[in-house]
Length: 358
Image 1 (cartoon, helix red, strand yellow):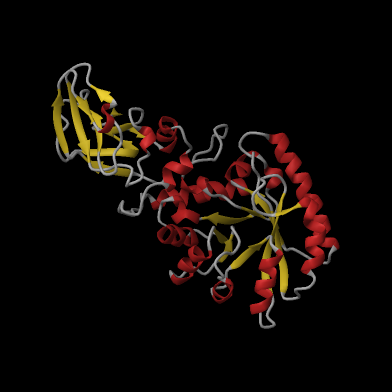
Image 2: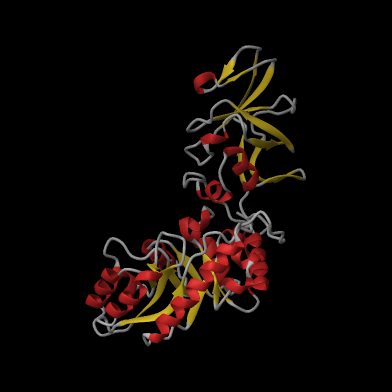
C-alpha cells in the first residue's frame, strides 16, 4: 500500500472541498487498504474526522490511537450503545428505537447524533414524509442532541437532475429540523463523485471514500488521483499446454495452440473475483497476460506465451505499475463486470499488507 498516494489524494480532496471539513470514509478496512495505517496517515495529514460503517470499526480506530471525530454511518446494531458512548463515537440516527436506547444509557449526559434523512437513496434515513412525526417523538428524549444533519446521494456520478431533487428534499428537511428547535452545526451530503461534480452539495463537511484510495467515483471526472493499492504475487509454476489440452475447473479454457501457462498462488480466496475468469489480465515483465481458465480459490492460470522468459518467482502484478505499464481497479472491474469498489474491498485479509511511503 502506497501511503504517499493516500496523502496525495487527501490533498486533492482538500483542494476540491474548498475549505469544507473532510470526513474520510474508512469503512470496510479502508476499502481493503488496512484501516489503522491508513487512518494514522490521514490523521497526520490533518483530516477532520472519519466515517465508519460499524461501531466495531470505530472502536478499533480509538484503540489504535485515533483521536479525531468518528461517525458511525450505518447506525447502531447489536446493542453497542454504551460502547459507542465510551469510545466517544458519534452515531447516525434514523430510528426512534435507537433514540430510546441511547436515552436509556445517557445517565443525564447529552448524546450528539447526526440525523440522517432519506431524500431518495431508499435505504437508511428518515423518509421526508415521516420526518415531522419523527421529530415530534424525538422530543421525548432530552439527552439526544442533533449535532449534524446528513443525507446520501444516489446518482452523484450519473444524474445531476436527481441530485438536484435530493438537495431540494434535504433543504426542506433542514428547515423542518430547525423549526423543531434543533440547531445542527454540521450539514453533509457529498460523497466522492459529488465532491468533484457537484460543489453545491458540499455544505459543511464532505465525505470522500474511494477518492482517497485513487479513484474519483465517476467516470466523467478527471482529477490527478493516485491509486494506493499495489497488489502483487509471484509465478508459482510454468508449463506448456499442447493444443486441445485444458486448464482449470470445468475446462473453460482449451488451448487452440501450444500455450505457455503460468500458475500463480492467488485466487478468489484472496479476493480475485471469479468473474474475471477468462477475461482479466495481470502484468508479468511489463506485459499484459490474460487470465485463462476459471479462477480457483487459491490458484489462477495465466497465458504467458507473449513472455517467453517468464519463470518461477517472477513478479505478477494484479494492480499497479510494472515497467511503465499500468493496471488499476477499473481495468479489473471492467473485466469482472463490476465496479472498482468491489475489486478493492474484496482483497481478503489473508493477503499481507505492506506499507511503504511511495
